[in-house]
Length: 305
Length: 305
Image (cartoon, rainbow over all chains, first blue to last red; front, side):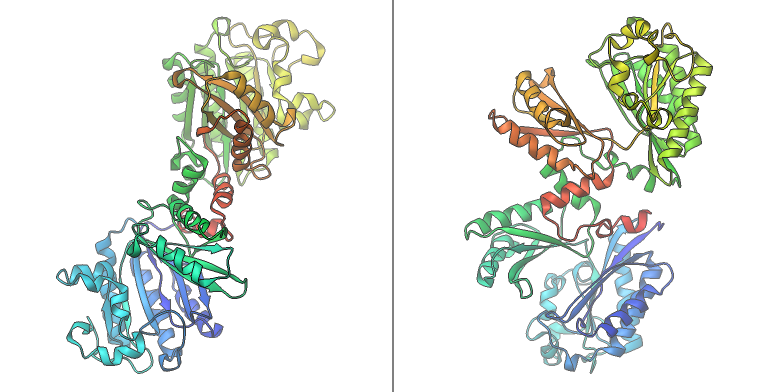
């Protein structure tokens, strides 16, 4: 039972070699005081996403242990994968969950960046809330995609000479095997994949375009279409930075509406990693038409807390 | 944080006089070690339903304190209400929640019945699992309705002379103001009201008939139609003794199907009291089409337990 809870969701550039993935996971989970919650790794992306929680000090120690293992094992010069990335320890977000503020997470991300730069000579970029805090005049640095533009890892060797792309901490050159690292504090993100009955990637991409905020869809939502080769279907991958304002059911039902245009239906959905109970309750309330739903209606809330 | 958890849901024959309702509630909730979870009282039924949880010894002490208050304040000779009842402390079910067995709840219900009979000279009937345990040869005594038949409270004065209706504990006569009490151990019950767009009670009753097990509807389900005078609509009240086998969504969707026949729609639903998290998750899984839902996908499950 933790009093103060931060969620950390590091993304590492390894999704093929299980030995490396498990070594990183074990380095994280062996730190006393953290709870390892979820591991996701995928060969097409060649990337792993690990979710763990704990109080600030333990989370910092654990993510530094995982990062050290990743830097030891991963060689970016040999890395290939569908997902954009700039380094072995690619992105490290810190998320406030319980009895911690966003500022606590900003501070922790800065401490993490400084420790990583010092111990491993990896250049550090801050994004999201940490970038907003350190560079109030440069809103573009909040955006994760800004730090990946013009060729991601391979392009960064050249781009780093550009004064706009100067790292926030550490050396002013890309680490020869580990590249660079993005870190920062952010709001909790809810990820859901929506599986479609069609194998046609063009249709999935058309639907994703109509779902995402940038092209006229739902606020707070990013979406992309991908193919699931194994199952012969396609998928809309959706990430949501404000599940309270834009609940999951709205993503699902808008996807259904847009898919209808092509005679396509939703065959299933998947939760990516973990999500907060309220994200489920908000949508359960919609579908089940509850007039009196709140957490106190759930028996466990009365004896778990 | 409780290690062993029993839920107790006593029903008292008072839903009009708030002073009495609150006095009973306070008697229960002032007992150290129990957590009062929900209070529901209703004038048409003239009945209150209280839900509280705790470890066995504290639950027993609390329900005896509430029962003493109810016996002091309620006079069944003056009681009128739509809901069938046999006494002031009408029904007292004990439900195993965590680290307790059904047998623990059976034993507790027997201790409760014996203490109530001894302290207040109220005759006690056992129902549900306690009746099945004590009277394996008399399955009809499990059924709550069996103990209410032939005139409920008013009829019981006469019925008690019938050897089949002999109380399990206590005096062989109805208490002059408190009547008699039903108690027993049972499985957790999930109650949901489904509000319909029609004011026509005949339609609500027709739909209820098609939902309940007894008349060809869903297994594990009881249902009855009632009118909500205030809102000018009707309601199907549903109680479910096995939410795992017969999930909530199936009740809602079958109600929708049956209501369609009359051009009636569902305008909302209400949770009665509290329900277990899995009852929500099972239905959320259906509506949101999750392929990978389990409790570990919920962040709070990793730090609340």
